[in-house]
Length: 102
Image 1 (cartoon, rainbow, N blue to C red):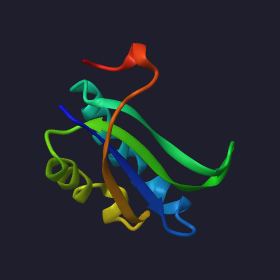
Image 2 (image 1 turned 180 degrees about the vertical axis):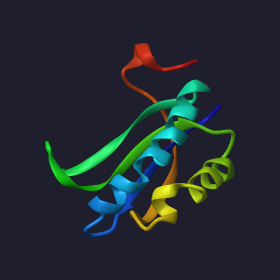
Image 3 (image 1 turned 90 degrees about the vertical axis):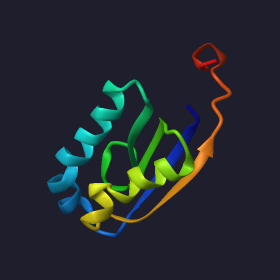
C-alpha cells in the first residue's frame, strides 16, 4: 500500500481538549498499528518536553489518498476542535534504506 503523511495542526490553547480526546485518538492509531499499517505517529510540541503541542504527524499505509482523507475526516481531534485543519499528502519512504518496504 502507498504511504501518506498526515499533519494535524492544533488550534491555540488546545491542551485541555487534547487530553480529553486523546484516548479515542490513540485507539485509532493503535488500530492502524495492529493492522501493521502505522509507520510512525506522535505529537509535535512547540518546545521539546513542554506543552502545548503544535500538532501531530502520522505516516501510515492507506489504499489511496481518498482512503487516507476519509480516515482523517473521522479523526476525533479534528471533530473536537483540537486540530484547526489536517494536511494529507503522499509520502515516499526513502531513508533509512533498511526500513524501506519493498
